[in-house]
Image (cartoon, rainbow, N blue to C red; front, side):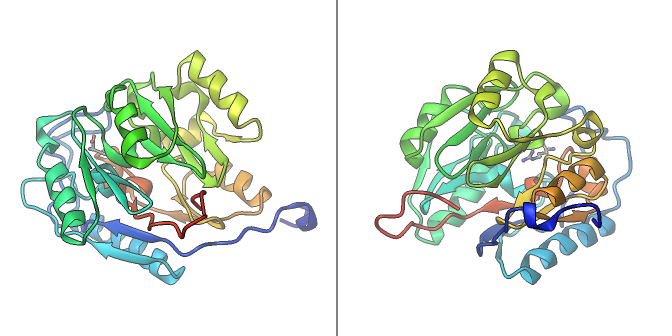
Length: 287
Ligand code: ARG
């Protein structure tokens, strides 16, 4: 830090967020739908819960509101709340999962929102929530290639009222957009270029010329699976290069260890669904 010029770094301001999380009470790896999942490999359920609890406590300590949805037995991936829906302006686009093993999670998350008075839109095509639909200040970056059907992008645009930018994922290890790209602040992002096809890389370079790009090592420890409140960035602690870049940009990175959840191919962002409240009249942009 001593060699860095603090004055050159922009000041970063956190804004209070509302998150939905699902305790990993029934977490396990019993099937394989991505290259990280090895059903024979033991999972320490107690450790998974402790790691998840630390993430939740960090959010609460930073002043964010964390709501919980009850986990359902037989749905071991339900802990990955980010896949449950996408919420913009209080409006909810329910998830529709690609694999039968996770199909029942969509209606469970939709019911949670309906019970709390949110308008819920159920689309026709597969979309795995914020796993593939990443909301920035002014648009939705929308992944496809492995899970979300590109035809769901138009549904997201109509249901959530923001323009969609399609991005094609090409590396099966980074099967959801939130494993390869994270929003930091309004129109600032960090991403792993090799996870995208050439056209999508060109789109990202044009839209975000100042983005932080991740190294192979950062991406492989799920460093892009990060949650930012405008100032603090919660991300896997092993993503040491990204952590340095974030400090340089004036963010406050907070390393977390979610190694048990990584056995299912998920980390901090996957466990966190952001509930973006209705915007006051006249405010167009999301934090
Ligand atoms: N095992 C889960 C799956 O393959 C992990 C989901 C991770 N979630 C995420 N938002 N990337 O669907």
